[in-house]
Length: 257
Image (tube, rainbow, N blue to C red; front, side, top):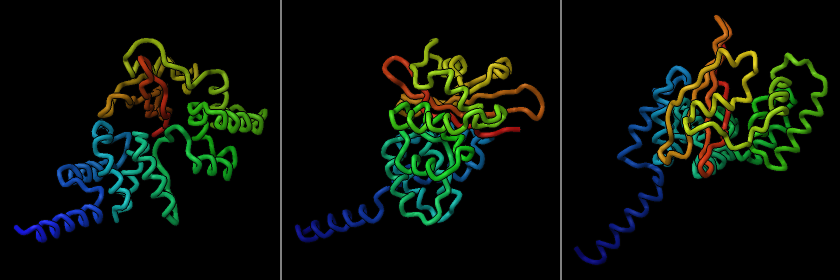
């Protein structure tokens, strides 16, 4: 083969790589199949766990899936990226958000909070931002603390029965960013330190490890509260490795009966 032909071939391969920067033919099809099967993060926990375990190594697959013409696949890719909180994935997700006319966000709120998160909190009323309370508490940055303190001031003596007020009270009497103590079992660590669970619900609460990510620096734990029929709650909690210990990374209520 002549040097000119070789040059032409190399240029062609480079152009192809530029046109399709994310696809890995060896894994993308499998990743897509898993996303197709992820209809409900609670009921399809085995699928979610598989994606959580493989997600860091397949982050390019998940980023490409954001652009899938099937909106369900795109939404599920977003959810998995947010469970992982992978820096590469979150950066790509933010770029993807910036190009969308109508943004539908779903999944956990990983830390640190983004500029988009703070704008959303600012634009919404306090009662519409309750899902951000735990994320602000876990973030622990000066900005997050300031926003959280402002939310506490604005709620004042609001009805203790509201979801927002209950969440704020639990955050106020605890220290969410602390290093979790009590052994190395992720499920036991989460259960022992689950500040987001009310004292009255603790006797009915259990936790189990769903899986570790590929880097083994994050763990996905399911927390189940069952005080009786029609009163069940499910949470997905991600904790991240910090030195020899762990810290809460995201807390998401995924279902209520």
